[in-house]
Length: 113
Image (cartoon, rainbow, N blue to C red):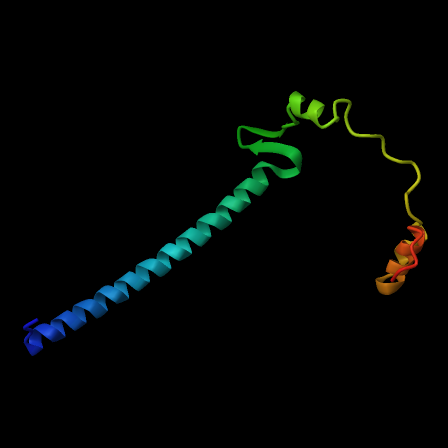
């Protein structure tokens, strides 16, 4: 390529200017995408909070599950009743760390730890 020094300098400046603008555009696009994703997650969490659909026109609408799905998983009659007696010793709740794990394994009739 036959370039004069002036043409080479102009090409270098043009390339540097292009790269500077391209980098700025890429970083702005990344920032916009990140902000958009955070906004989307907030919208999804609000809209479907606690098993309800929340929209400005109608709040806290129960979604439920399709009848065919409840039958397929054996949940036709609803959830089982809540047990009256806990399955574990509530005194074990006061223990933490290794002591809590030993207590849990003891209740499971396991001596390994």
